[in-house]
Length: 283
Ligand SMILES: Nc1ncnc2c1ncn2[C@@H]1O[C@H](COP(=O)(O)OP(=O)(O)OP(=O)(O)O)[C@@H](O)[C@H]1O
Ligand SMILES: [Mg+2]
Image (cartoon, rainbow, N blue to C red; front, side):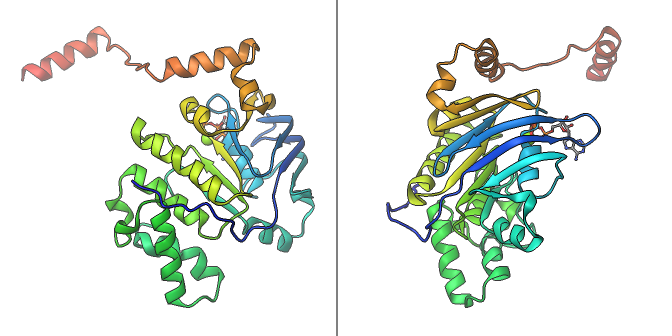
């Protein structure tokens, strides 16, 4: 894949940071997020890290208005999102791009139609202008030759790039990626990381938030980190400080993650199951 992103200023004139103040949230009485305080700086790439089930996706869903919170504040570009009218919230939400884990493409539409959706739904642009914009965006993510493919015909890595094309076509000042490299082989992951960096240099003011388990990817792309543990920020600061930290939990997190990368858990079958399988293999 070759990316053809030119280093030029684009149509963005505002930068959006995120301030999280005493945020409490959970699906039952037990809270997943417990008085979380954190900052995500504008115009940078921030990685949200933490063990499986610690609440990373929940935090994203709260920001997108898909999951309710219990108390606290989230300020985006200085505006409290829980204090907005629904009209104000919708207007802000339109300026947030999201790349969901599987690309969230509609299976009955071609790649080109999928990427065109936000422009078709929300603008009065002519079909010709939309087509040109879509093809230009597909070109940015290296998928222009696959414009007529249906999602089922795309590989996992292509789906993620397609999801990225659809997320960026509206040039959002705030972009979230939930696990952009999960399930990708190391070479495709490295290309995806390069694409994130290219996007960041193309859309200069864009605030990017990356939810990931992939520390190799974090090392390559992130400027800033937010590590969640037991509903609070265990670390929130620049990435060099994260990797240089002597906090025992952070050290364990970093080491455990690199070990997990190579670990395969296969539960040994018990004697009865083994015997039954042997029977079957002999038959
Ligand atoms: N819709 C839901 N209803 C009830 N509980 C939920 C719901 N979604 C998530 N949870 C619970 O909330 C906790 C946090 O889930 P979340 O998806 O935010 O974790 P995560 O940090 O994104 O994990 P992963 O790294 O595995 O994606 C988990 O214990 C999960 O079981
Ligand atoms: Mg998650």
